[in-house]
Image: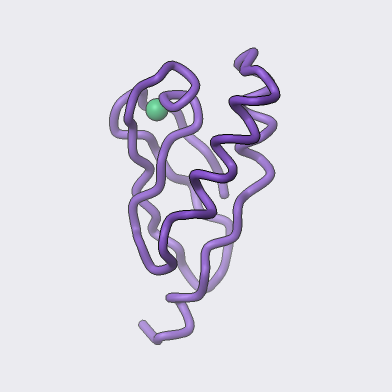
Length: 83
Ligand SMILES: [Zn+2]
């Protein structure tokens, strides 16, 4: 538990892949990435791309541990992502 864990959370490219696989349009993918990047650093909730593509609001709860890839789950659609 150090302040180093509060660094800006980069946009994980796996979410673009997930959106593509879900059939999202390029404009949806671009706007989701812009939305993600606009969120302030240190926020532990991040939007779910699949819910976003459907016009819904789902949240991924980040439990980032020592910078390692961490599985997160959307509380709405239950989709898992390793980011
Ligand atoms: Zn979701």
